Image 1 (cartoon, rainbow over the protein chains, first blue to last red):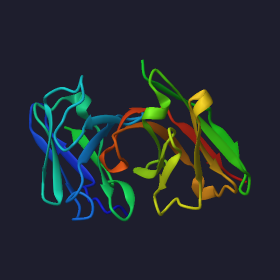
Image 2: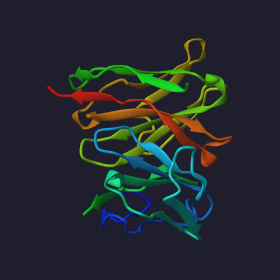
Image 3: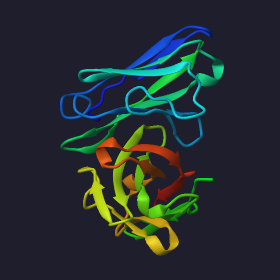
Image 4: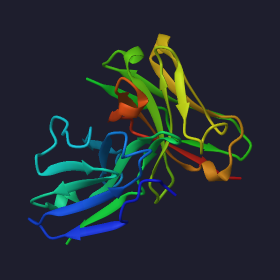
Length: 109
Length: 122
C-alpha cells in the first residue's frame, strides 16, 4: 500500500482535459518535489514531469504538473488516443525513501 | 546517447540466488544515481533502492531492506541487484533507471533500462 494515493482509473474522450491526482503527506509531497511517469502498455516507464511542473525535452506541452501542499496533479489537455497508459506519481518520503503512487490507468474513450 | 542495458530474463527455483545487471553507457556512471524498481505482473511500480556509484552510497526502501542487495562496479559502469534466496513472490519485472539529482530526495529517473523479467517457480 503506497503512501501516495492516486485514483486507480481515469478516462476522457479525445480532445478533453483530464487530471490525475496524487495525495500524500507532510513527510513526502509536503516536503519534496513530485515526479510523474508514463508507462505505455508493455514498455518501461518514461519520465513525464519532474520537480512538480517541469517537462523533460520532448514531452508535449499538453502535459502539465502542479503541486499544492501535500497533493499534486497531472493534467493532460487535448487528450489523444496515444495517451492511453498508466501514470504514476513519485516522491521522496522522509521515513520510507522513494515512493511511487499506486498508479492510474487512463482510458481514452 | 544514454543507455541502460539490462541482463536477460531469468527463471529460477525458490531458494536459489540471483544477480541481475544494468550496464550504463553514454554518461558519467559515477556522477548519477542508479535506482531499481520492481513491477509485479499486472501491478504498479515499487521503489526498491538507489545507489550512487561514485561513493557507493546506497538507500533502500524499508520494504526491500535485507531482502536484496544493490551494488555497482565503477570499472565496468554496471549496477547490480541480487538476491541470496529467491521466493516465488520475487517474480516480477525489474527495471533499473538513472537517477538525476544531487540527493536522492531530489532525484528523478530520467532514463530507464528495458527491464529484466525474473520468474521464480518450483
